[in-house]
Length: 150
Image (cartoon, rainbow, N blue to C red):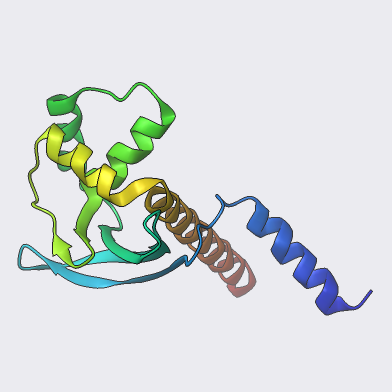
């Protein structure tokens, strides 16, 4: 077995730890102006249930105040899918280039999730996992660099 084969298997094994990627999935991280302020975001693309390619942009990190305010306004979500969907909905910046209002009612959040659909939620979860994995790898590399430097 060659080294590259072993590396590919390791990559596949690591990839299996991530949520499945929906058809047409891709994502990119960048900064985006939200309410006149440059903010870290990520954009995901996926093939929706309607057979069309969709895209959505989300805040990379939802501010604590916004999360607390939303939880107090809408209550705690009972199911895991509800919690994940809720986090995706409150972090949404736009869907198919149509801006989402910063403050939305519960019915507006639920309407957003209906438009996002299951594949879009899977794309959000996969992108969040990829970002976390990348951050973990960068933190590990920084630890190694600090150790070697000492």
